Image (cartoon, rainbow, N blue to C red; front, side):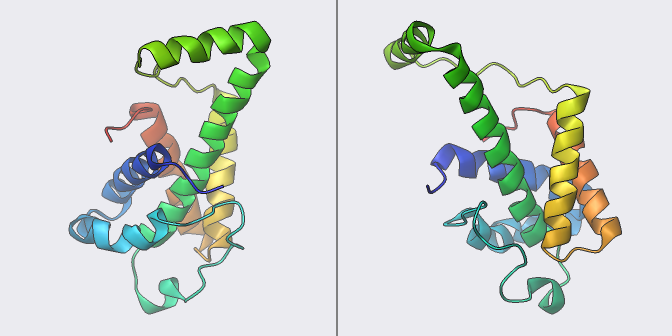
Length: 156
């Protein structure tokens, strides 16, 4: 299932925040460097490593950060959808009926220590799978968690 535009917006905002922390010199080129990874990337089936050796050809973190953030954003959104499904029949129908009547902004995300630890582990594993060195993978994971804690709903 392709990602919805809100997923792309949230992924881009989270990735931009992480890149600003880790490699602010890449911000002027962020749109160009991240665009290929924000469109048409299926984070569940892309097979791990970057297909065309971006890490070897260009010394930028933006592509890896963007793919890591896509994985994290997708997992967090799937988690929220799962929580809604657990509400059950009438409550869910009432919730979706209310959402159809008037759009309301989502409540700010709050993350438990356990959830943040899972996000960090996921982000580190994804960065490593993409070919990042362990120190860079850890830095990316730390920056993703910091971005979520400091601004759980980044501007889109």
